[in-house]
Length: 350
Image 1 (tube, rainbow, N blue to C red):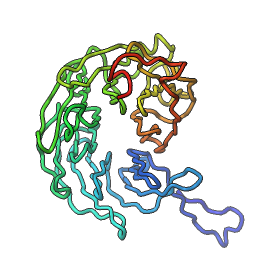
Image 2 (cartoon, helix red, strand yellow):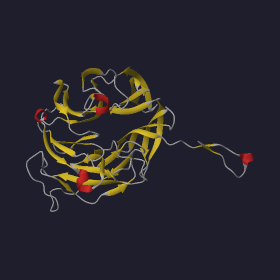
Image 3 (tube, one colour):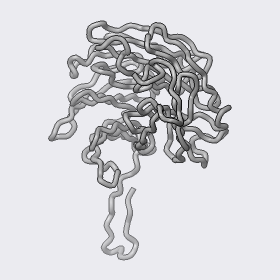
Image 4 (tube, rainbow, N blue to C red):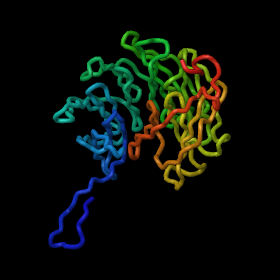
């Protein structure tokens, strides 16, 4: 887009104004962040390093254009950027972060997958759709195992019983893998390799899945009127369903996403019947699982950020799409007088 001054056309100059990017991914890293965005109505994608301004806004410092980039993961000084063309020709580009130049593409390799494939880094492992790669040598990722095909959402956390292992949760999308949706748990470690620990079909669609970051719990839910399910994953092979929280029945608004920060589940909701483009604010509400039920922790907050696929990290809620935003949250004391916490771990703090 360009702007031409209107007063003195004899001295007119064209002033370049950066077009807004459609955000594909956003990773805050303290005083800097990394983002992937696409120019509207084009396939031009830019991977950017951004500096945090004192005003709270991230300002781009340096960018590299990698067409059709959809997601990224970070491991040490390397960025793994996933690209695809019309839902095929999937590749991962290995980009080194250095002082000068800021980004250098050092290699790329073919991967399998589908158009909505996820990409995360868990420990020293790169997970791209259903393929799991060992990053012992960051420049030569080695395929060591496969999750379920058409993995829709993927999350990871340290394994609750094996010190050097990661516990991975993956979901299948009913549209891509056949109804019903399914939920799986996997184990991967440098010493023990890769193995499936638990999983199977679920009676409800899965659009969101999150591990609790302070307790051995897992939550999943779907857009609309389905429940938020909470599982005990303290012994992954014996994962147990603890509770179904029928959010719509309790609140009267549709579930639209959630994230976890320090044991608190922040649920985003929306008026029923309105899509993401509807003129209605999302509301974020904090909830605490006390071992028997979900207990509200305070008033909700209205916002206009697109919530899927939001997630929690420390005291922040991250919204990687649209604008790449962070919301800070001051955690109340779940053991105080207003909220009861009963039962042994994983229900109470470890």
